Structures are given as structure tokens and as C-alpha cells.
Length: 218
Image (cartoon, rainbow, N blue to C red; front, side):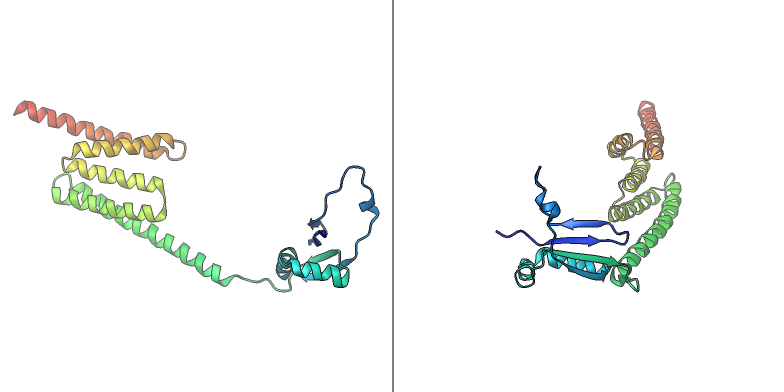
């Protein structure tokens, strides 16, 4: 079986990168003195990458170069392109992604303001507490879309406040414990999340105390 075609890429800084170069065995000095017939191609780096892929993957091309032209080494000398190319398709995808994140952050700000207002009214009106919970669930959907686990945890804590205001203390307790376990495992990344869990837990404890006092009075 014949040896594969050796390809050398010479970059902008005249550094050589060889492909398919046979390994030298210890004590074998015959390869050092043996010269290879080369085919030199000077091409810009953009097209040069396509050339390199063809020479490495197209075995029939390499075989024809060796048999018909006696080429043993392809020397690709890269030079800077005359004009930089822009991947407009990828640029459009990136611009759309950035625009989407900006709009989502803007929407999250509005929902946080709106949810905070309804949560404050939820101390007196159960309907407002329920609306604040629905807003928190909408924020959670956005957090799931963004793939941000810390944002998702904060939204769940917002929802737990709504549960506390509506008297669903047991459901709120389990939800807060889950987020506190997550916050403790990532305390170095988000210390505020740990403090947020502790603050809401104190509010939950207060509601439990008030419930016990009402039971004793009755």
C-alpha cells in the first residue's frame, strides 16, 4: 500500500504544519536526506482551507498526483486574503439572538415591576396575590427559554410568596427548600439567592406562627 500524500501548510508566520507525514523510526536517517518532489500552491487562507480538505479527503486526487505527476508533497503557502469576508448569514443569526435577549430582558423588567406591585397588594387582596403568582409563572417561562437556572430559581421564589399570601404554606415550604438547596450548592455564584431564600423562609415562619396563634385563640 502506497504512503499517503504529504501536505504541508505554511501559515502567515512561516510556520509549517505537516499532515500525513510518516513517522521516523529510531536510527533511520534515510528519510532525512531524501528529498521529496513538491507541488507549491500559493493561495489565500480562506480558499486554502478548502484545498487542504480536498487534498486530505480525496484519495483519488492524491493517488493521481503521485502516479501521473510524481508529486510527493503538496506545499500550501497561505497568504492574507485581499478582502476580508463576512459571514452575513451567521451575522443575521447572531443579531437576531442578541435582539431577542435584549427584548426578553426588557420584558422581564416590566414583569418584575408589575409583579412587585400586585405582590404588595396581595397582602390585603387575595386576587392580587393570585395575579402576582401568574406573573411569576410567566417570568419562569422566560427563564426556561433563556436557560438560566438562577433566574428560574428566583421566579419560583416569587411564586412561593404568592403561595404564602394565599395561605398555601406547605406548598411554599417545599418550593423554598428546593431553591435553598440549589442556592447553597451554588452559593459562590449567587449569594443573593441564598439570602433571598432565608428572607422568604422567615416570612413563612411568621405566617406559621400567626396560624398557630389563631388556632389557640379559636
